Length: 583
Image (cartoon, rainbow, N blue to C red):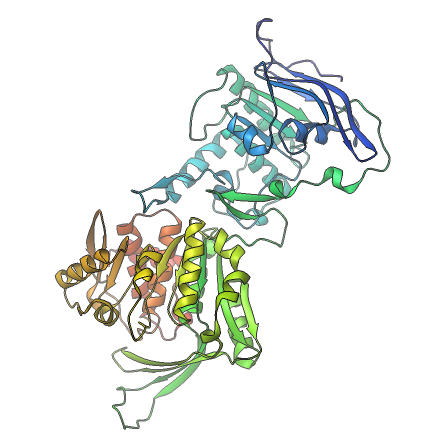
């Protein structure tokens, strides 16, 4: 196999090459892709492999990195014979590869792709959460050193140009490799400046030495690079090559985060979600009056409105609005009826930007509705007719299993049957998700013992706290006492909401109190749901419990400044402004 002259001075002759391929053979049925292929990659050098299209270059790369098992021959890495059964094994040995399909998850942000399956976490077991801020900062640093005209690190990959995507894939490989970077036509879509910047990264890496030991990405840790633009591998050039020759097997096209799949690398088929809301979806009919009616009393309302509702859908809508500029992806799972209210609910959720891969149409039950009364002080009473929400069962858990397996944060409420909510919690928790339960409405008999261990965090308000543990807290001290009782039941953490009087948070490492934000409240209908949506956003980005609770409290406070349920959800800019103001 012809090999180009090295771009840097060779290492001493006695030193084994970083990579050596000897007599490699690979066939796909009757098609011989590689015949006695040979390749030598000296340490500290850039080796270019050139040749015609279809000559077997990509097949050679895939055989080296464990995608395809070779039929014969030998691969030697750092002087020792190796056989990688998967790309993950090659990565564990310090070999990073940029494939032609780039292996980027399009519905994740740039920083999330840079740390895919390598996420940084913070906290104390079992409440370790993603350290989003540190990952974003380090991604900025990595791209500053490696790229020209770097894309925004919070932007979703699907919004980037082909050149930007290739730049991200190259930067990720160069940052994480501790021994060898292999690139399969990685610069085809790059402009001249980007291509030169990418080439410049590798010699600098080589000069820093072999197999630099580190756990976090550091630009240029690799020792050698194989660059392929044209390539040639010994063997016949065939005019007709079976399609499977250029296909990646399933484990290449699926990416995992902390042991679970994070998404497919095929445009339009993403199911990865930072946040999954599983619960009810209703249409709300809201009447506004000076005071709420007493039993047996009829009063005139000043006005009414019809809008999106249901605690699950409200939390999904609020989280999606908050996530619009962060690169996070929010999915909703539940049921709607085959009726006009169902179509209205779907359209509303789509308008907020929530993914609806888990939303099913139930032809046997109507869409749920909620009848809501709101008085002049913003207090409310709510009556819910659950409809198809109450038909949710174990079949829905199987139907949405891919979403449960992918989510980082699962938001649950109790406007669907408790058994379904707990089954979802169990599956998501096994997959590594952080599970948050809004225990509303509290079941008549309270929660069973297994429910307390099924979730990581619970967010009851005053009345829900009283129904669950017999204490109705009105002050921070009473809320702290209630929180201790929640933890004694087996919870890892709890947030007790006191409405206009603030929020108490506590886990087994301690706790604190968030004072209420000063806002002009007009309607408290959406406050609880927007609080939980903000909490999920904070947890997903790696905030600690105190920081996530304060962010959530700001979201809930802003939701009271406007009328409606989902429509009251604040935008991220509004929340940041309130936090900056300090309440």
